[in-house]
Image 1 (cartoon, rainbow, N blue to C red):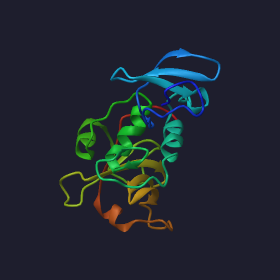
Image 2 (tube, helix red, strand yellow):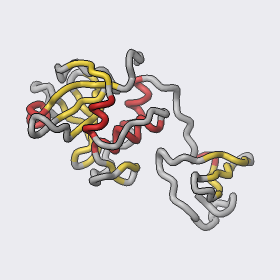
Image 3 (cartoon, rainbow, N blue to C red):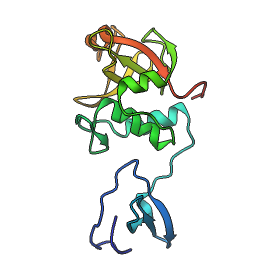
Length: 185
């Protein structure tokens, strides 16, 4: 966020995906924005990307934009994400509020299936290393694929015949749940 509507104006704040910005004025090429703390500044109009209407495919396209972002414990921005911060942030971009931890997201989401290959794109796959406490979450891509933050945001598979099969994920899989209900692709 810049001090003035000029390309080389001093940067006064950093905005990341998911930041709440209210547009309070605009010119042809710039938006004047206000942050929740009242601070105002300018952002080039070209920096804004309107969100497509919510669908399972749109949610996954958005989630894929974060491929390669490093894993950072407690991270919940495009600069670094943990597993539940990743799922929380992507849902937030579509106006769906999730609680912060994987365990809490598991508690709040609607059950779908206990078969790891049943997930539709956008459903959430949950895992528990000790068999009880939920410790990991990621997005179902369909056909047993999962998009998740582990080391970095990446794709793995729970299908043994896939090259990117992750046996530890399959072993610790608990259940598929969703916040998307019967939303179609």
